[in-house]
Length: 90
Image 1 (tube, rainbow, N blue to C red):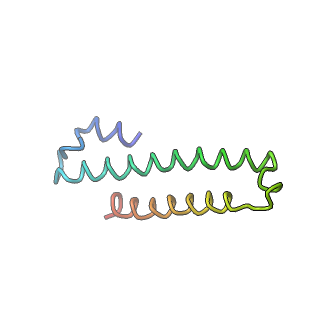
Image 2 (image 1 turned 30 degrees about the vertical axis):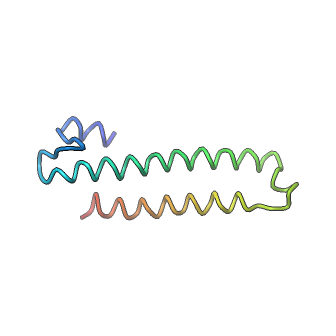
């Protein structure tokens, strides 16, 4: 929604109608790259969740993959805090 709204307003990765053109490239790069990481995290969490339901980790006696999934998701979440702060609030 945000991208379509900004594109409709004239924002592009190479231009910005209300300020420095670097904003457009920075905004689309950071939010797009973050979105790809969120998508990868959701897929990874779904795979880990299905494997947990099937008892794979219980049979192994190791839940490291679940911990790694949690760490990855928290890292992506933490990055969003910085992206939101610097792109929307500053």
